[in-house]
Structures are given as structure tokens and as C-alpha cells.
Amino acid sequence: MPYRRLPNTDTARVKAMKRALELSKKYSPDMLAFKQATLNKILAFLPLFEQAIMMQKEAHTRQVTNSKEFTESFRKAKLYISHFLQVYNFAILRGEIKPSTRNYFGIDEKNGCLPDLKTENDVITWGQKVIKGENERVLKTGNPILSPKIAVVKVYYDEFVEKLNFQKMLQSISVRANDKVSSLRPECDKIICRMWNEVEEYYSQETVERKREQASRYGVQYVYRPSERRALQSGLSAAS
Figure 1 (cartoon, rainbow, N blue to C red):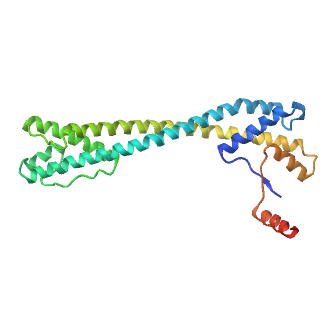
Figure 2: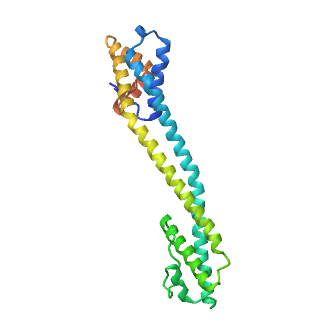
Figure 3: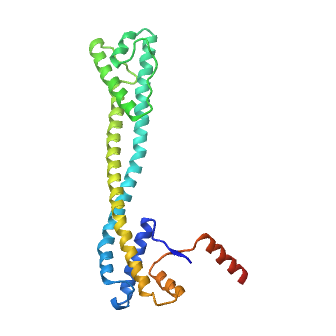
């Protein structure tokens, strides 16, 4: 015998409740297979659930859209910070700047290796060091790096920080939206289960096949087990 299975996606949950509302408009209360109290619960709950789902989708869309811009700003910030330090090392190699000035950036004066810029925190840390260090160095030596200028590096660094903060805000909004939908699902499943129970009870005097047929009109989902599906397919093949 097939077993009843509650909706397992939000789309299916909404569909089940909307199906109930469609039939409530088609039949008078005394002809409806579930109770008026259950109908009232659906009428009150469904708009809240649909609104939560809509906000969840909007939050996700905004996060994905901004993620593309954030990824590009992250790439450019890394590029300019790394390029600035490369040019700085070349200036040291040419003898234009003393190796000891690397200390302005928190770098060992004997170490010309570029820092790793793999993570957001790496870019934030080294962006701050490079901007602060170059400004302090120029105040004392008056000999700035010109390509790229530290002002240009700062533009891309600030843009990255702004995009990062905005992305984190969108992520927070998305998490809250997901949590809201998750918190409503148990109540949604409870209402659907109650409605389906009442429908099956309404048709309890019918034959099993007739009851299942009528309940299916109300959106009640019945699922065949694998062995049952194979047996059903074998029977259909034999009949044909």
C-alpha cells in the first residue's frame, strides 16, 4: 500500500495550502472535506509563510548579485596592494629606497617576499599596513611611490572594505530570512497534516482506493514504495 508523505519543500507546502483554499471556494462548508477551523488557520498562516519565503528569495538574490561586485573589488584590492609592494621592492633593488624602510610596513628589511593575500582578513591587514606605512614614510622622506600611488591603492582598498561590510550585512539579512522560514515550517507542516487527517477521516467510509482518490483531489500525496512501483509496472506491462 502506498504511504502518505507530507510536502518536503516550501513550494510544495504552499501548493498544498493553496489547493485547500481553491476547494474551499468551490464547495460549501458542509461539503468541504476538512473543518472550517482548519481553513481559518490556513487563511491566517499562508500569507505570513508566503511573505517569509518572498523575503528569503529577495535576500538571497541581493546577496548573489552583490557577491559578483564584491569578488571583483576583492580582486582589485589584492592586485593593487601586491603591485605596490612589488614596485617598492624594485625601487629598493635600484637603490632608490633603503631596505630599512620596509619597517614602515611591518616587513623585515631583509625580506622582500610579498605577503599572502588569500583571504579577506589578509587584504584588510596588509591594506592597512601599506597605506599607513607609505603615508608615514612619505612624511619623513618625501619620496612617494608613483605607480601605483598610495592614494590609488587606498581607493581600491576602501571600495573593497565597503563591499565587504555590505556583503556581510546581506549575509546577515539572508540568515535571518532563512531562520524565519525555518521557524514557520513546523507550524506549516502541522496545519497541512491536520487538514489531510481531516480529509482522510471524511472519506473513511469509502473503499481504500476511493478514499485515496478523493483525498488526492485535496492535494494529499501518496507515494508507492519501490517494490510496489515495480509490482505496479509489471502488472501494467502484463496487461498491455
